[in-house]
Length: 319
Image 1 (cartoon, one colour):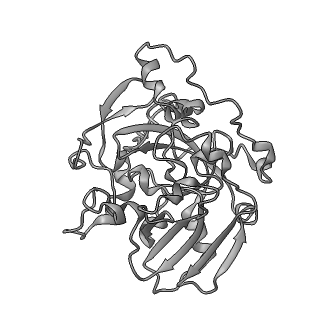
Image 2 (cartoon, rainbow, N blue to C red):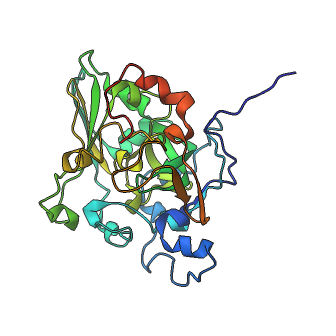
């Protein structure tokens, strides 16, 4: 008899955190029986999927290799509870983020590659085969959700870039436009937002470049038109609104690492046994449920990624 074992990250789709929970702190109150009147998005904030030139590509077929052990977070929460420091340092930046101009949008690929290139976002998206994946998302702030992302494997962009053997890392950068994004006028932050990964991480099957969510183009407050999803790492690694991929021999220094390296390191892999400097990482609040559950090493994706970190003794892998 064939016995099929579920991977450690598996969870039923019914268990995925609803998108709405992700977007609004008031979802916590709802889960506790407190009224959530007025907890939905402010008037005038729309998905505007019909205005996206790639809207015809959604919904994409779901890749059933990536499933969940919890309910998907409702979309309304995911649209109202966001970190996007370019538009403010609080969670309710959905209205402010509508100022983000996502067309025209160009993505530059440069550094240690055979030939540098700049692609319009629509050209890039249409070069790829989009798919939907259900992923856990674990914030360093000890809350979590589950999201139906649409996009393509990061490995496909690496394949397109054709990096040289000298390339050991990928440096990613978001836009810089203080007139559009007032948070970038705060000079004490090292703008633009920068993140980085090793080539091995970028080409791991879980690394995913997101162009959509909930069966439509991804919203502005969630990082339109192109963001990263790395479900085994804390959420600050999943850079939003990417404009540049640079392949480099030198390890890049990320935005939060530049600000506070003792709390936000390069690796940022989820580990319940390694606390943040100011709070425990042993458990997490599942948005929209009112439940606090144990956190899993690598957010439950250890079978897929643990081998990436062999022989790295001395590195701060879990911060």
